[in-house]
Length: 187
Ligand code: PNS
Image (cartoon, rainbow, N blue to C red; front, top):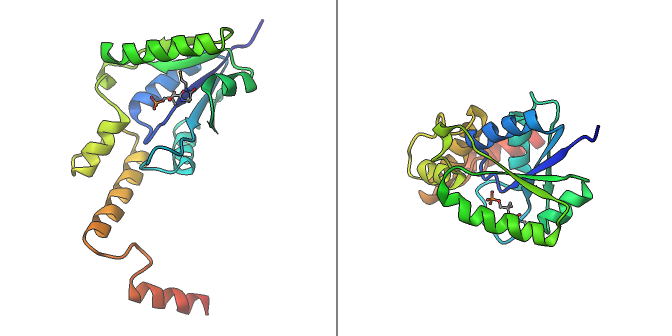
């Protein structure tokens, strides 16, 4: 029987519980699922691609048939390189539909051999997006229950650094006393 490989492409900046929900659903349907992070030099992301990869790897370590990768260029070209047949995307609400339909039809035009499969995350995540997670965290709101704890921790660290920077404090490891300590350690 033919094994079906799917890719789940996205920005994942940061990965959320909604993404994880979709990954879990996808892992039950497809033989292999590759979570594919777009390397997009035009965007100004909160997390580097390497950080996002580490977070997603940790979040998906329990799923034997899920792996994490990065790509650039066209999603369809990447899917074909991997010999994947399916592009998995999540649809949360009707507002996602128009953009997702446009993308799916363009991908079909570019590469008719690929199918886009839409899945819905649990209703409790229907309002959740990476953009809102970033915004809530930046404005000091709680993001617990929106992202896995390991992601929440990383977001908090980012916000701490940004907060210190805004207040004119040098980033960690760069204060005069820390520099002295580091010099001593190296000596
Ligand atoms: O998580 P996102 O930002 O909604 O993901 C969008 C993504 C990465 C799936 C989309 O921008 C994409 O596929 N980009 C790769 C370039 C490409 O193939 N563009 C044509 C899409 S029709």
